Image (cartoon, rainbow over all chains, first blue to last red; front, top):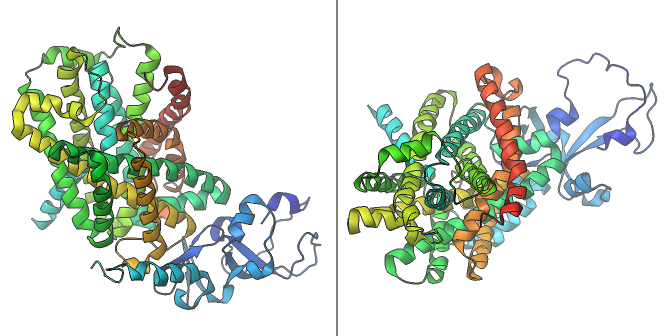
Length: 139
Length: 409
């Protein structure tokens, strides 16, 4: 999401849309993602758009791009320092799994089966659960 | 009745939890060098921490989002990461100082060298974070911290010239033995000690831990508005004791034993015992808070699962990061670095980082999408903006003053 370089010269007001208008920068990027059980999964590090070619300007008649996934993982580094990770390195949260967008983004699925949860699962299974009391529920 | 007890407990916990190693050391140093002439800074700092702690608690209770989630969301990844780097570094420094403080207090009690206590202190901090419930942890440390009231008692027992102390406090002036730059350097340090950013991270994350809702806001506001100023009075008493006993004797505070010297002078062994328990509880409580804050800031920035209300297995990266932080603190202390010196630097660097924490909170507290109808009132915004100017001045002044004065030498 590098806005400055790709910004069109003249920006027409957005056409009226049915439903809620979400600003990608304001309502999606850097928001907390929470799974169906209320467990935090990750933060939205970037977005994956479909129906738009990278680095080529859009013309007025083109069909609007569609959000296909929320991205996380190494993409945070490239978003901060520039560049683009290879597509195979992206960790995707498919947009169809999103159930609500509020001050946090809620998923309709559990994080247990998601790619985005693998580091958490690895640390849990290899380290935390091996320390006595790792399963202990405080309440 | 139960509600009343809850409020009383909350206030007492806030009083006992207010003082940490930074407040202890800075207030004693300032008292021994400047008398009561810098006490106004404690007042300014206490009002500021009340203002912003209340605000961050309100954001957390209404939106369910803790401070560092908000910082990332508002500042974006780049400025957010820079902020995380600075806040985390200072927080880690404070963890180190607090763990060192526990060990120094244990050394005073047992005469066993503090380096031997450090592994045990760090392990105990980890064990409490690993096992003990949030509420119990907070209350026990806070209530035992109330033993520090003995500094106030000691001040009375010392029968000082109250007129002279009040005169120093009410018409502050740079003492003849010190120059203005050093005076302002310690003003910044005292301000940083009173407004340490971890208090806000901990307060807002604690609100999420305890599941605060809108209806809990009144109680939290009472806790803050009564507890923090009374906690600030403890700071003043520590400075007062130093001003009455250490300043005339020309003692320069470089160790914990000098900080408790006036108490032992005034009240003997019993008072000293109270002071030691209080210091132990205050540093242990603050070590818990700062260690948790390291975990909170990291987890909230990267969106990991966090919180003591979950079992460690359900917040794995959060718990691992805190273990790593404690190990780093242990490693730094094992080099023999003086915990008191680390503390003095940590409060100054805290002052530098203040705007990074407080500006995003102020912005979000005014965002109706997060806050609905609970956005800041006009009065709070005016006060907060005035404070933002003070914070900015302290932040910009800290490093130049540190260089000019050779860190207050």
